Image: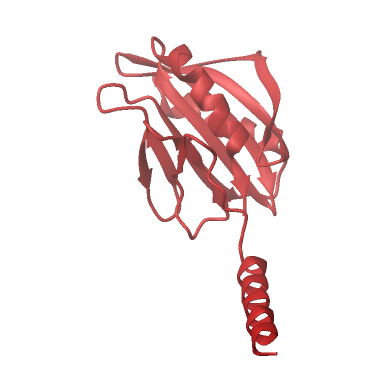
Length: 171
């Protein structure tokens, strides 16, 4: 009788613990690069350097190669396409040069949600960068996962970045 009670107690405790668990499995070879207070999980390769702040999650490749990913979230009652149009207007005002071609838009998935992926180039002073911005909407919030690299380094990290995008999750 005592043995049965102990087994029953252990089963109840395990059930209670497992019921409260969230899907926080970290993919192999990756680490978490998002704060606990954001409604998503960003995972990056172990070799990347994570930089976690309260509302922005980001990581960069290395001190010598500042190629990076960053997730930002904005309350926006609009479509992804409308949001992108506003981004374009901002980028044209902000950067020395902004080069975007509609043919560089792809359908994507971010956190299990349909997304759009926009690839473009910007110039800041004398430096040129290439960016890939993957945007989706979840619970009336616009989420943007942006990969930024020098034009020379952009293709070097695409495999890592595509893995980062595929492993992104909403909590």
